[in-house]
Length: 590
Image (cartoon, rainbow, N blue to C red; front, side):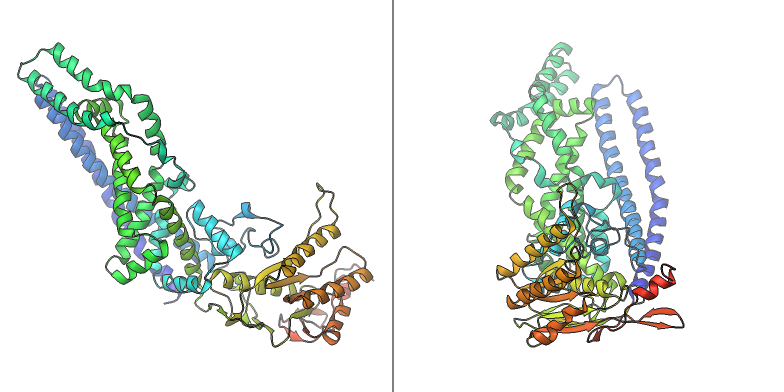
């Protein structure tokens, strides 16, 4: 089944499921209203009987909460189905080259980074939006870091991505629960951001949580059977409420902060629940997922469920009247403080790994989705040789369009390709395609090529240098700084691969020719590898005067006064230029 067939079939199934849920939701609204009306009638008839009245109130609340819980779960299911439909629609758009449904990461733009600005990683509809399927702030940051700095074990990451791509149905459930619109505010509200040390308990809490319910219920029974007066009953009730009121300020401040974690805890719960539901029947698969996230997902689900129950109990006490009743008869605030303190002591040291593991998984799911959408991609092979072999290379952003694939090779003692060609022939796109292949390979992501074999390389580029008016920095000086950064990396004995596009543009042609020649000579002598694209044909003399250089070019053809490009890489130096032709066509010359 092709990706588009999978998405179309999934869309039909989801639309049908959404329709079924739409029919059920009104029924729960009617049931909820019925409980309210019936309980109101019973309360009216039992108003003079304190015991019957109290029992009616309690029973009504219990039934109401059960119905609310069922309704909330069904509504959540409805939201998830709608979100899946939206995600699938975005995937179908992406297959047409529209990645606007995915965050581009513009805030990560950094002109000083070794390659990200030159390769358009974070521009709108750029490489990051092409990859990004994360749903949390932390997940996005970790995907960004993996793309910019590579993986420690890209081969391991590649195997993870390969396997996750076989479970696309699950990935949409995982992504949907993490990207619900109603939980948008939870994107950066991580559990790790909460100051868990603020949750404390006091020794007398443990005593009062037992004494208060005994006293309050005993008082109610004694008063109902006329063993004590109304005044004594009121005194005992106020006495039961006193400990909670004494700690009310601290409890409210703490609970208000904890309530902010509700949406994030729901996301974590639903994400781990999706893992358990999909992989739980297969111990080997579940163990494999647990090894990826770095924690026991079964145990984590139990603990996050417990946290959710505590937060639900916390929400119950936020109604002032109900909160007073619960504190009088169940010492509710004291019980909550003890329960949160116990949960914190048991789990606070695990929370960071929960967040990190699921954020890592978001990144793997992102790359796996790209792998599923483009099954023709491959994973890089790494060796210790100096050779670089790339066959059938295309730029990822052109994968959905009519494109021409090309090869890139550095064999034997070759270190540099000197690339020439006329304007618009494809030099810059080719450089960016090679750059993307290297960074995808380093990250363990699928590479858009038929073969990719090389050592692990650190990529540096100089393709889009700009001046800085604020720093009074000229274009030429800015470019020299960029080249100095590259040279520093080479001189530190890093295994560097460089992409250079028309360097030293900010000086005169004679300086440019001599400076480029000497710079490339030093780079070659220090052992760096790469590609330099240039319009300066004199630089091609390096092929004859220095070992390690070879020339290649893109070309243009003019037929019937029309300019054509075939975008195919050829050996040797380009002989055809098009600047004069274009100037004449645009009537800029006679």
